[in-house]
Image 1 (cartoon, helix red, strand yellow):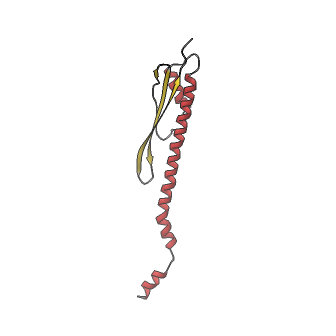
Image 2 (cartoon, helix red, strand yellow):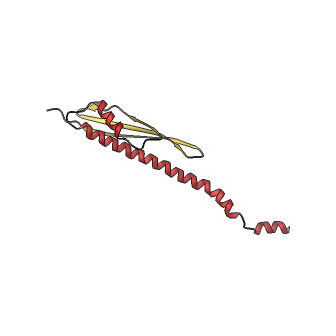
Image 3 (tube, helix red, strand yellow):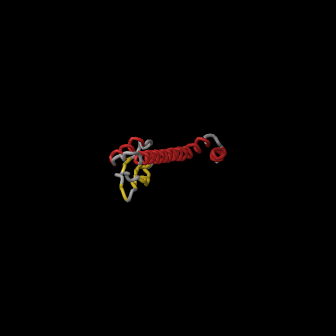
Length: 130
């Protein structure tokens, strides 16, 4: 019985056990924050590309839809880990709607997370030719 009492009072190695339990959770949280940061970076890159495409769509002479789509694709940044698509501009009564979408599967090291889909669009007024 003396050996069991001695083991209960012995604190050596307790910090290692606690770290072994807490470290995987901490790494998972840090990696999740990193993944969310990549998603926010892709969102900012999509917004920037849409702004550039909208500015380009309003210049004279009016560029074609293919040129606008190319401009958006050229100006996007931060979409390295997912799938980025530019939709064809749609026209209605003097307006063009530009839209992009991004799909990224979330990876949380120990398990695969859901696929996050982000879609952004911008409506641009195209002045009629005089």
